[in-house]
Image (cartoon, rainbow, N blue to C red; front, top):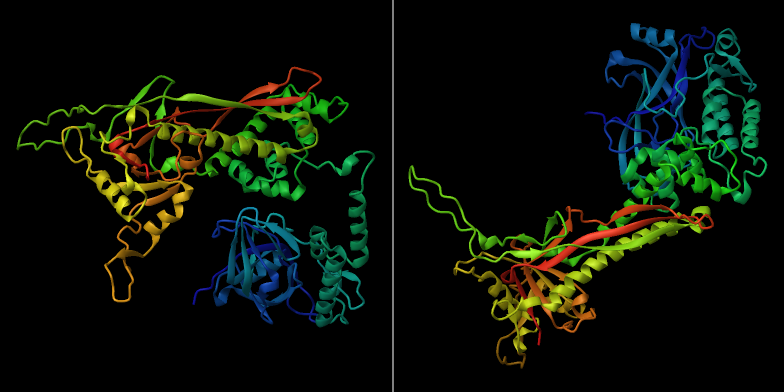
Length: 632
């Protein structure tokens, strides 16, 4: 039976020979897993093993490089799980060449082999607690696992864990004091069981004292610190975090950004705006993890870093306040570029998330400029001709079908990041405004689409085009919908040839939504079957219209401020391939565009603006590819 290995690389280890009094065999001690998230080659995201769900055997085999062979076993160990870190204490029992090499070199890394029993994929932005820490997805959370072996490896994958322990490994005397392993090896009264017990107590005491400072606890455990030295290091770390002068005014502590990184500055904007998922899409999850680890930078701090990155930026001179610092940063090329990306990502995400009914039936075209463009109907091409053996293939020609004409226009609005938002770090409100503008752009296009459809230019929906249902029988029902589907499928071109249209989507106002759902989703329909003995007129029968077409609801059909808006009107469209309508975008760009306008020229008013614009157009297409019912 194959073993499913989750290779979790922990801290380094140190092996030293001991005398016959303590143990004739060399001892192995170290941290096998520090409880954090680590990348593994067989998993799409970093892995976190929940130590609370890890089952430990009484003794665990020590292997070399996870090789399941008798020759690869070099010893045994006892694993200690305190819920935050997995440590081991054991012996090298083998005398092979590989085992001697392990003892002679001394400094190695540990890797655990575990069998996963319960796994959860944590999505982006979702948080969970494990091993005394807070984690944020995307991650692979192994909630339950069974420890199968510990391996000695050359290089660990966990970059944050200690690579090696102290050069001189410390053991614990029964009295609680530390002593080098060389001294322990010559001390006859040292008992191996007492050493293991004292080590467990030391680990637990350090974990309890350090609390959430897991990095300090890991160092103290792996480097063999006693409680006195560990407490002094803890006090030093706490004192280093205390405020200095006025730099903490307003509760803000400057972030120790040790590297100038454009991606991390952009990620800070997304995190402060409350949309970390956009940061992952823009620059990747590594940047998000770095920013979450040290906290997102304030806008003023980002401005200072932008001055440092720009060759013309002057970050050395003192600025009177954050506002003057930000104003200076806007003169660089770095800060406007970061903000443009921030605005564009929010706009595009919000625009793509907004539903648009027209996409279910309208063909999408790209316009090269603002002049009128044409698109040919599917029935415009003449049919293929049979070619005799050795005959000539003739050139095809377009029939007399009229082309569909369309053109695009520009719709625009201004977006401003003003002084209050800049100085107060109110990026969430600014991101919300950007998203609302994207939604407004989508609504503008939707309004244009349905204003064009309701206006019915040049009698697009008419009896002459055989695409109009009127009269009492046009109300949405089993009969009228079946008639509309039949009429659509029977449409012919100008030469009397069947086009081959297929009904694709039924679009109704909210007032007809539940009627439409009954027609398209019910398994049975009540139909008149004559007078029955019990007086019942309707009996259930199979619904032949079920799932015959898609269903979409558009409130503008009845709620738009238009003379032809009606709660009874409904439409049946063919697929976009048959051009029931055409929606065109300049250069094929379907999302709104932004153009930076720069900082305001008024020295008394700090603001940075963008022009948000969207170039699009809409036109009704082939009248035979759509049916309108007035529903009266």
